Length: 335
Image (cartoon, rainbow, N blue to C red; front, side):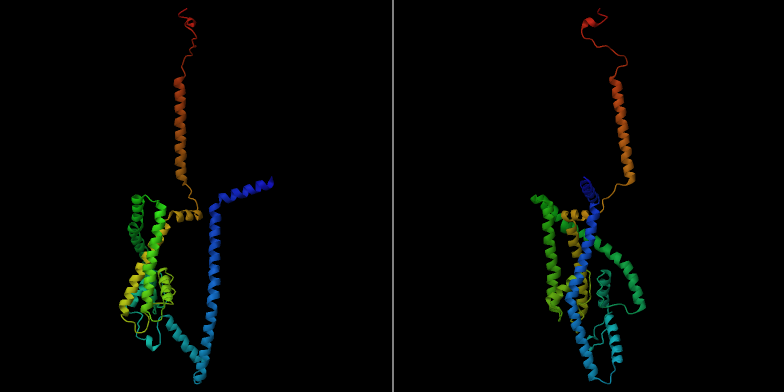
């Protein structure tokens, strides 16, 4: 008996806090996914890092043996200064001296990466004034960019998603959820082809040291606004039409980001995903003022109903009791 009562109470507790348990499971799943990613990245990349460290130590040792007049401390200071400059996008190599990081087209590309929060990190402001302006520019520009993207995506969604779905739903009589799923799949496939596969092929042809996988990797990292900065186009030595190339990449990043948002919004409007999201949301409680209005309306309706019943009962009951007549002879007037 006690076990059945305990089990019933546990079931009622779980059902009453179902969204909370779903949310806890979501948090645990996300943490496990983070740990899974860390384990995979560590197991894959750590051997390559160790191999590169050994190679650099060997090269450094060989260089010091060949140049005995140079001390290790002086070499360390020189390498540190060169690496610090490289982190700001300035290289001491002769073949990279022709590429300027802050001409107009490069600055335009940098501004687009800042406003889109991609931030490759290959170029950064050098001066204190540039760093201060970058902060102010980002504080104003990032919300402005979000407003711009929201307005553009909202207008595109009308023609790219909502109207086609309603057209096929009304014209062919197809189920609206089915049409939405098919449309989202076709839209995502088109976006992958036009903004990932084709640009990856173009980048692999224009960039000397990029293969197709590295080019596709750059497209994905850029349009998902991750922006690791390990691959940046237009930075090769003696890049032909470098200014025009940078402008084209800027336009590609803005258009690609808009398309990615349209695809994501299209998938978010699917009925199945809406139902899935509701599992993890808190249920909205009715406002207290609305409950008070409803209770007041209920009381008013009950009061009016009771008054109507009393009034009806009062009308049906006569003021003087009249005996019922069984036959005409029972009437005293006739008698």
